[in-house]
Length: 245
Image (cartoon, rainbow, N blue to C red; front, side):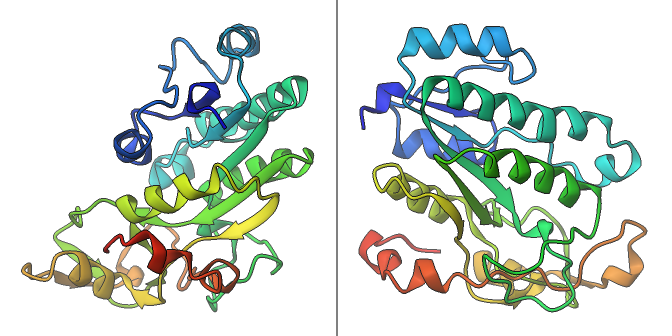
């Protein structure tokens, strides 16, 4: 697929910034040029670009803020995603939607693509709302993942919360491979199950982190949202990429 016919939403975010280094020819419009809450403006931009695919990564990811006031997430994560799906339907364009491990209950981990969806908090519900919109479209792919920056951004890390988070650089490399595969449905892309503390130490082995428990946090957090990515891993794609953690 011609990269100049692909639109990436959320280009100024963590993933978008990393992805532009790998796929510089893709279109990364500003929110002013491609406002996902303004369908007519989106349509005008997409038609002028000859859009054949949208990678939808734009989202409100402020977990605490959403828990306190869900309105922006309701608009951006649910209504905005519905607009993107509607646009893809009108253009018959492929869609890759970046979702989250937080769509699961988070009580046991090792979640497979077909497991029961029951978000633990409002952020998770907003991402599941986006998934529901994408499920209405037969040319959509939902990618559930969890990624973080190359430097762990906090001084403390949870010792009693489990994740399968990978670095944004690694996920961006995997996402690039999906463009030409034209996969439909739902796919998990994740790393090995580990505590947040273990993840922090894996990306910053020279740093010392203070221990933190999710019981100390007022914000409701799931215990274990680790993803089972066997369908992805068994393709042995990760070893072909040659990217490091």
